[in-house]
Image (cartoon, rainbow, N blue to C red; front, top):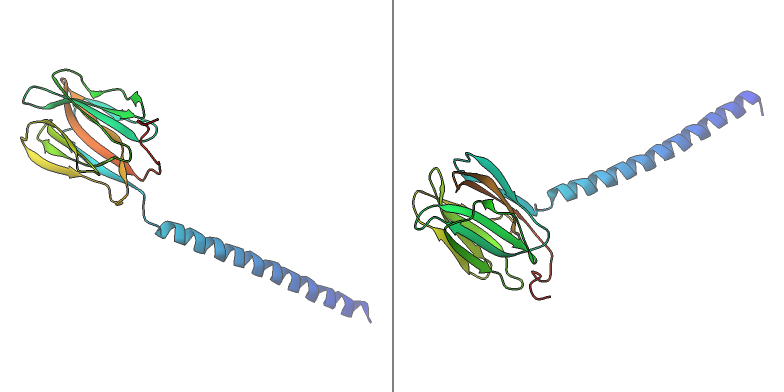
Length: 190
């Protein structure tokens, strides 16, 4: 065989090897694309309820680790909501807003979690109703102003944290952040 024919055969082999390599690479890319598309099409386990109220003043964020196990609120007597606090496991968060006035508190049972926050607002948050998956609720303040309702978009999601603003000792806005939390209990029965 002539060297020219050998070189041509070698070039054909190399081209076939490159084609096989590119085909495998394309198959891997196609597989990863399908996997990514499936992940993007999955339902969202996180949602956000935008803030209501004026939002003036100092901002607050109430976060913690684990499931919320209790909620505490402070209200001006027969008036606006002054502050809110969440307990995660056995640890209380810092207060969003201010303490003072009448205190309201609810301790959640094992496997109980917050599924709705409703209330009334104008410039301030005048009332809050915090509802659990067991139908229990904590009510603070007075029903004055415009109605708001906050709840998660996923049916198994629960309240994870709150944010908003406060001024002059009164909550001026509140927003809620929801997510699915896979925990067997809320941590109060340990």
